[in-house]
Length: 99
Image (cartoon, rainbow, N blue to C red; front, side, top):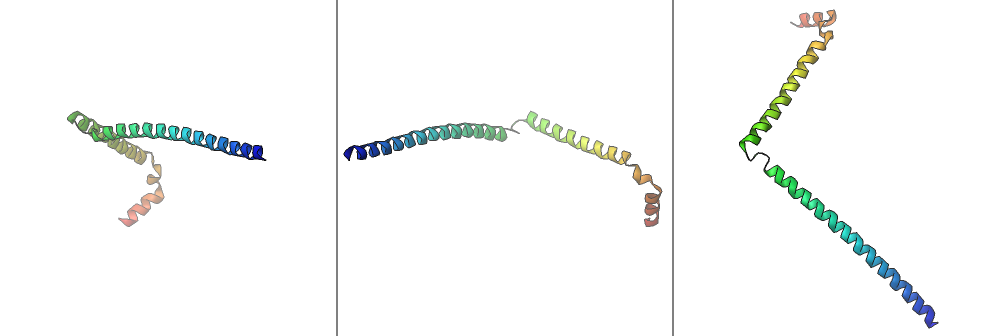
């Protein structure tokens, strides 16, 4: 009877030990991921904070914005040119009747 109780206690102890080891390993992995994400976040925060810290970076940002706006205007003009429906008789009649 005592041997069965001892075996039961040994099994419970083994189970508890395995649970503690698995929990410790998960905790290590979580801490490692947390540390990596924290470093990445700090790097991104630094890049964001220094995004416009020099005149050259400011000028470069303005140039990128202007290039995108120029592309948008070009796309709008091209769309208007390619829209041949606006020259249909029906559209022209509708336009002249409104004017």
